[in-house]
Length: 158
Image 1 (cartoon, one colour):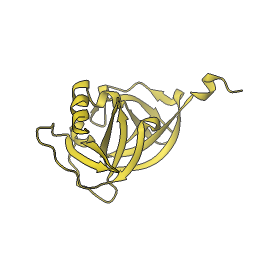
Image 2 (cartoon, one colour; image 1 turned 45 degrees about the horizontal axis):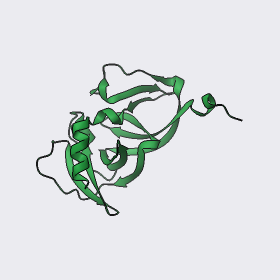
Image 3 (cartoon, helix red, strand yellow; image 1 turned 135 degrees about the vertical axis):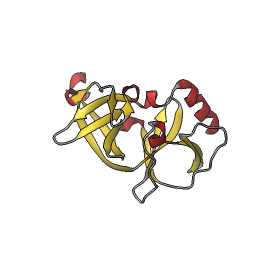
């Protein structure tokens, strides 16, 4: 029989790209990965909120992670994806440059984040994973949106 510590010594993450960096989010928070589609703009929302999409009958707010992290804008390409994640009680779509991979990361390879990684502040980060020849930045989705922003997105989704 497996003990609890044997079960939780790895973290499964979805890997995606923003600018030149690779990021990861916990697979348990990811509902789906979608191709880019038409986004309906919603007035009086922060710049990083691009609007809403109707995803299989569910109105889902979409945020642009590049804009949220104040990174350089990038045109939509065939590789651009929307990662649908659950933050709190809200489903939110994250626009990313590409979504590449699903990998298991041993927890002992995850280190606390430095103050800034790839132009992204530590407040948004869960940690940094040093893999063989890769550096993976793990996002803390609960910090990417503050409680007030989550309430605003929840209203958009109704």
